[in-house]
Each structure stands twice: as structure tokens, then as C-alpha cells.
Length: 454
Image 1 (cartoon, rainbow, N blue to C red):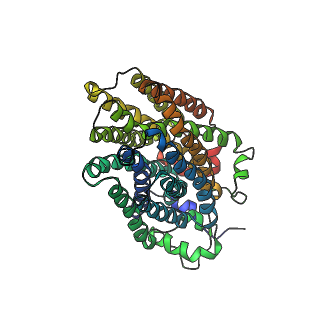
Image 2 (cartoon, rainbow, N blue to C red):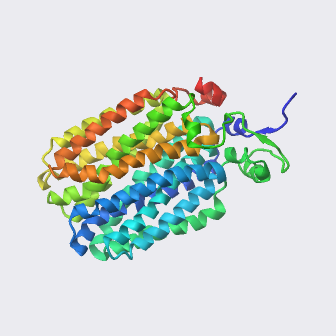
Image 3 (tube, rainbow, N blue to C red):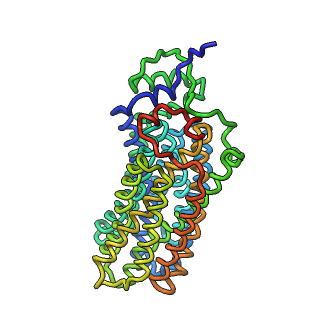
């Protein structure tokens, strides 16, 4: 018997992405810019806080760890909420929460208060990213999914770039409290604006019969001739049991779930060691505050370029070769930094190597979101991405302590430790079975999700 329901997956995958779809991806990406900005403001502000509160650098390790612990919990919760109640609500709720709590941090009077605020802000940071990845992947045709997700998540280092720029411009004149006020106010404003403009994921709505009229309106906005009483299916996504962490460990997904979780753990351990301690490392080596923050900017801006380049190469070489090559390059860059005498006499060389190494580390981290979104079907996509990222956040929780321990022996030891953790990332990525294939757009469009996975 012929199924006369409208196939959302076939409609989305059967044509290129429209200007409206690109606008939706851009709006989703904007939320992650502010996620990256607010997340890294603390790293930029720590030297000024140390001076105001007369505290050593080690006193802030717990503050940094609290935010990352919040992000770990937020990743699990945000992914679950996104799969159960919708990606849009989970994403915008996360953005509003971390914006409000970043504003609150500007009124902190001691380390205990700041630690508490950063933990709860971390819940928002952690919840935003899996839902942004799911939304971006489900707005567009399957062939554009890796690029759309990468363009969205690459905004983490872009936001980190802004944190460095904001720190260099605001801290010397207005201080760290103004830095947090500005950084928190911007995402609050964005959440209000996007509440009326950003629609829910069409692929998510296809599984929600009560919301099919809403889906019909979205599909018409995307240029498809769909009646208001249409019924929907999505043949491109496999049906799965109710979203849960257990669903990620069934035999079909177990190996890839463990491997992508390990890759996130060691990669985020590497990333957060760098973004947390690079400004303090450079100021300790004799650089002024502005130059130290530009070091953070170089590390993150390199990541924007590297991640976008990696996403483009995906379509030609697939994700396995591309990601392993980028990881190897990041290991080499970390070893070069470990062997360099860091001081004012080596400013240009250090900034250049930070840009190279940061570019590749952030490129690997960012493209892992696209890989995770590819591994899991729509029914557990936000849960799968959120769980992998949450495991990565555990590495982030360890990073302030690991970085502080390594820095006790000097900058070279921290970069040597980063090289070692990146080597573990290389092994984990090599173990992933279901990498994004080497497929041209035309062939990719013709494949169903089931065929891609075979």
C-alpha cells in the first residue's frame, strides 16, 4: 500500500539549501559565538582578578573547573531536553541562562561566589552546543550537514577570538566587571530576538504528530508545497527507541560512542589547557596584558580558519583522513611550542605557532561535532552529541589542574602534555568506524541514511 504522507527527509535532501536555510544556520551559529565568548571571558579576566583580589593563579583553578563541571552536566541534560522537548527551546534557554549568569558574575565579590555563578553558567554553555549542532544538521540537506555543523560549532573559537579582543580593549580601561556585563548582555538580547525568529528542527517535528501544522508552515517557508493538514514521515532517519544514554550503547553504536567520547575527552582536555592558561602563561613570561590576550586570539582565530578548511576537505577526502591529518599537525605544533623559549624576544614566533596549533586543535574539536551528528540518527542525535561533549567536559574539568601542574615546571611542560593528550585523540579517532564518507554532493543526496551507514 502506498504511503501518501509527506517525506520530510526526501524534501530536505532532494535539493540544495536555500537562502533561508543558510540564514537559519547563521542564526544558530550566532548563539555559539556568544557561547564561546562568555565561556572564555574568565580566562581573559583572570590576570586582572588576580591583581584586584591579591590572589595567586592557582586560586582560580576551582573556578575554571566549576564552569567545566557545569558544562559536563549541561551537555547531558541539554541533549536529553533537546531530543525530548525540542532543540529550539533547549538552545535558547541555554543561551539566556549563561547570558544572565555571566552578567551576575560581574557582581562577584570573592572566589566562592564566582565559582557558584560559573558552575550554573556552565549548565547553559554545555546545553547550547549539542542542540545547536542538531538544529544546524537538521535544517539542511544531508550533503550539507558536515559543513553546516562545522560552520556552527567553529563559532566556539570565533567567540574565543572575541573574548581575547574584548579583553584587550575593555580590561585596561574599564576593568573585568564591565567585561562580564557586556559579554553577558549580548547573548540575553540575542535569545529574546531569536525566540520569535528561529523555528524548530523539521526533522524533530516530523516525529511530533501534534506539531505537524507547525512543520507544514516551516516546510512552506523552505519552499515546499505542503498543505496545512499534511502528515509526515522522515525516511532518511532511522527510528530509534526513546532518547537515552543507554540507546547510545546498543551494539550498533557502542564502538563509535566509546571512541567519539574518548576523542572528545582528550581533545577538550587539550583545548581547555591552552585557552585557560595561555594568557597567564604569556604574562608570566613578560608579555603585557594586551599581548597575552592577543595570544588567546591567535589560538582561537587559527581554529576558525582550520575548522572551515577541514569541513571543505571532508567532501573530498572524508572525515577519517582529514581529522587524523589535522590531529597529527596539532601534535607537531605542540611539540614545537614545547621546544621554544617563550619570551618577549620571540613574540612573533610564539603568536604564529599558537595560531597554527590552535588552528588545528580547534579544527579537530569543531569537526568532531559534525562527526558525532553523522554517527547518530535524529531520534538520539542531540543526546548522542550531548553525551560525547559531556564526556569531553570531564577532560575540561581536569584541564585547569593539569595545566597548573604542568606550568609549575614551565611552559614547555604544558605544551608537551598537550602533545601527549592529542596523541590519544589520534588513536580514538582512528577507532571510529562510521566516519563521514568521501562522497560528492550528488551521490550523497541520493543515499538514504541507512545506505550511508552500510
